[in-house]
Image (tube, rainbow, N blue to C red; front, side):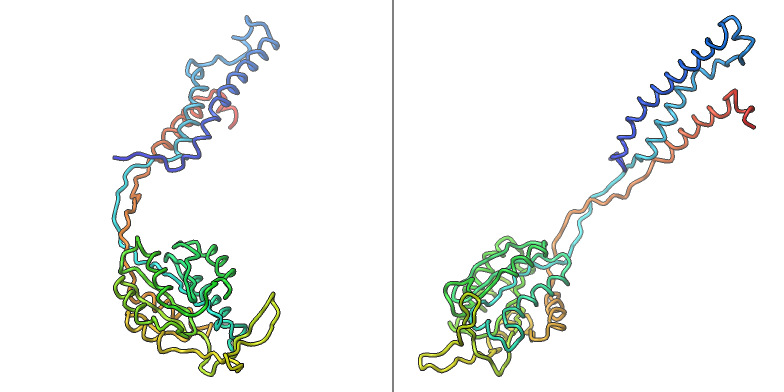
Length: 335
């Protein structure tokens, strides 16, 4: 049987015992001194009530009573068991498109800002799931490891810009490779990717990304950002709008949301496609999609099914103080 203390911090109360002992000793000395000042020792038998032999043990009874009272506060417990529980949790990589087309502003204030806000709002609704962040354009990079520290995640998200990637374009395969690397030590039934993008596929690697996701047991929930009508792509320099992106003929490029590749990647991996333009509904829909196939993680938990013994110490403490009360020669004088 395992024994342990319930409130071990109260062990500090034991420091009171030496103070109590010193106080009692000094009090008794003071009391005797006062008697001798009042009268010579030969008159004490006539002037003062004769002490019973039992009262000599009162200081010890006070200390023992206080000691057991402290033990009752600390509380002694026994009994525990280790049980294995299956907890359903996910490991979610938010794979965010940071290509220049995400700067389009038909979604106020921009597609990228909408995607970042969606990530934050979704994390606020999560409980025990671990989250990581991968950003991609023509290349990909992991910017946050899998963690349950959602506050830190918000800090990482706030710093993301389209210029975070030097090589532009939209390569879903590179993003998926980076996500796979982060899932190295995660069981396949708990691997989830939330892909946030306008869907413009410059490299045509969506099929290769699907094959890799299927091989690695990754479920993709894709979130489409942007409008079907599209919008020009602003070009900023040092925070100032310099104009809009043009093609080789000088015509303004209109970037439109392309959902075909996003839908295909979600459906092929058992996930869902979600319209990300509605910030009020999309986070809940993402959470629902992630719960489709929640992975099970077996965890060893030490459960304290304990017996408390504080009452026995309390009874002993009460017994000692009751003796002091019953045999106190001055008890009747206080009635």
